Length: 283
Image (cartoon, rainbow, N blue to C red; front, side, top):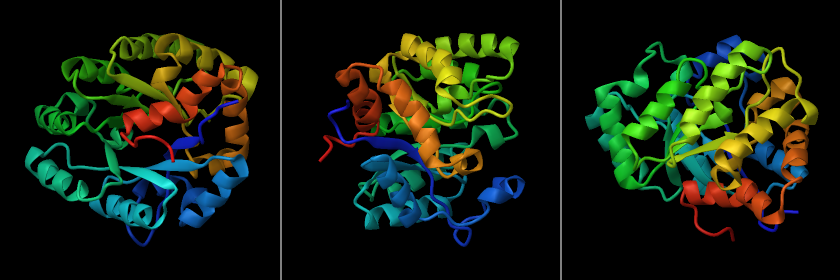
């Protein structure tokens, strides 16, 4: 049993009146507001103490909404927001603005929705990510496989001072054994870089079973490659709503994590997230 209060490292909130969230057009079940009060109820039911909010739209409006919400909710430990990474001048100005909030703790860009396959290798993007490294802020990469997981490993090698967070274990293609071999190779290349960490999150994969037995091989692969001190739990709510919701998602991952020693559970359920996002000790 973990001795530290659990922190969910990957929680979303959104307000359709604050930002566009165009990707929701293809997911009608999620095209509604999801509030802090709803999230708090889900965390309470799972016994999860706190959370890191993660951006869900590549807009300043979405990040501002998350920071305003976090300022009013003590259980929200931090916000992973968005910057205009392909414009270093804009990114620098936006970064200065976000750093006025002590809840701002990282940056993410929806690379899987960006039409540029080589986004992570663009010179302006690398320059902006250098600003993050200098500020001690991590960079989350979502849904990286198949287009961006190899590039994520290359990025981590090119910017060794930048902490790179592989969201959702890069989205393993669980229903495709041949593609899984490529995923393993790319994830191993990421893990070989000491400045990378990964999230046990977002593992509801279309066409694949979501259960302890189905996820056990992926869990063991993540442990082998990263170790508990470089892994963190994330619920990926409310995206998980379309696959059953927070509680069944939590139960499967918790069943896997609880097989580890208390110290290893503490790493995945709290310590890694607090270290990566520089949140200090859990109160």
